[in-house]
Structure formats: C-alpha cells, structure tokens
Image 1: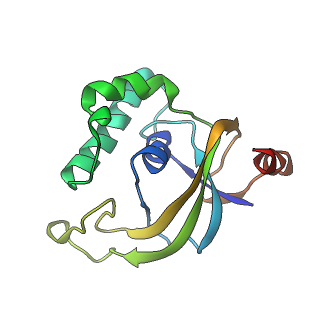
Image 2 (image 1 turned 60 degrees about the vertical axis):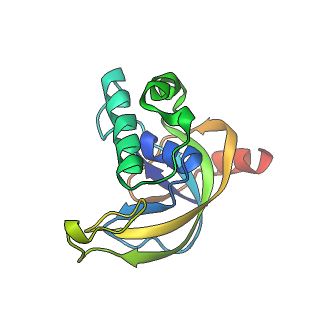
Length: 156
C-alpha cells in the first residue's frame, strides 16, 4: 500500500477537523493511501514551540476560511492536544477522489475551504482514523509502506 506523509498538524486536521484536501504542486492519483504524520511540525524539528505554531496555523486557516471548528478547538484547547499529536506514525487511511487545479488562481480569487490558491487541491476523504498510531518512518512524496506495517494495518 502507498502512503502520503504530511506535517503532523495537517494529518491531525484531516483526522479531527475535516480537512478534505491536500494542497500540492502535483496531482495525487486517486486511490487509498495510508496517512502518515511526519516527524516535524511546520517543517521544523519537533520542538514544543513549533507544535504550538503549527496548530495555530491550522486553526487560523480553518477560521479564515470560515470552516466549522467546534468550541473544543479554540486556541486554549489547542494547547491540551499538543502532546497527543502523533509524529512519525501512520494515523489513518484516506481516499484520494480527484483534484481541482488552483495553480493559476490569484490570492484575491481564493477558493473557500482548505484549498489554497497557487496549488492543486487533491480531494480526500477520511476512511478511518487508527485507534493507535503505528510508528513508521516516512518519506517524501508517495512511498510504499513496508510489509510489516501493512500487516499491522490489517490487524487493526
């Protein structure tokens, strides 16, 4: 099975905030993928300050786009989830269903939702969140999940 690695805060947003696109400069082929939370928040090493900045970025994106974020996800509540956001782990299964190309959209012509102007919005559906994240080293781009990890997915 193939996997897609995201910064942990964005994998968390897919699992818990209903983020339904993955913005990339390329099209992700439709199909099922493991959702992998990378090792670094905000693309930086996993220092606590970056975790806070990462979740603030997620919350600000959701708020700016007027997405529904329930009261449990206020800024003060974000601090309580910081220790629980998994890193270097497979956290769920997603299905890529298609894409919309926003690469030629200007900032003032921004689409609503999680899509970003200047990117390809790969449409995703959350298939399942794993009850327990499976530790696994990831890779850039799409990568093949090792057999021993795939076997654990079948058992969960």
